[in-house]
Length: 180
Image 1 (cartoon, one colour):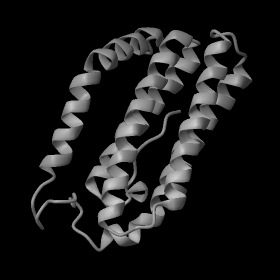
Image 2 (image 1 turned 120 degrees about the horizontal axis):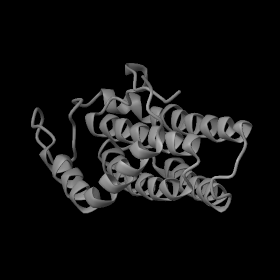
Image 3 (image 1 turned 135 degrees about the vertical axis):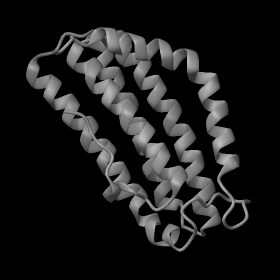
């Protein structure tokens, strides 16, 4: 049903990999909301996804610049991703939970493909450059130093979005049927 993180999806950097794991979790939550036909949760979950994407893109940009990776095509792909997701969200929310089973499968498939292609086609070209660096590399950190700066940025973002995330998470959990 949902996407699962595997080592094959590693971009070669702890921050980027952590971001991808969080994005996969949010995408899986959106898929659950689609299957539950809960358009209110879908709207909130897409806002959470958009917020995580902005943090992720900022992290990628900082790391890519430090690794001297050409960002021109990467930035275009990031902007396209945001527009594509906005269109997708608007389309789902406008239907107010009224969609057939084939639409559910279509939307769920779209999200999985979108997330997988973001990682494999947009971010993987950075992997060779990132593998030349320490896995925990973060710009401005000394070699071997852990990623305190990135952790702090992520912590601040999580604090700001904690209320929205927990509310969305509770809604998503309550929207799902119990399985025994």
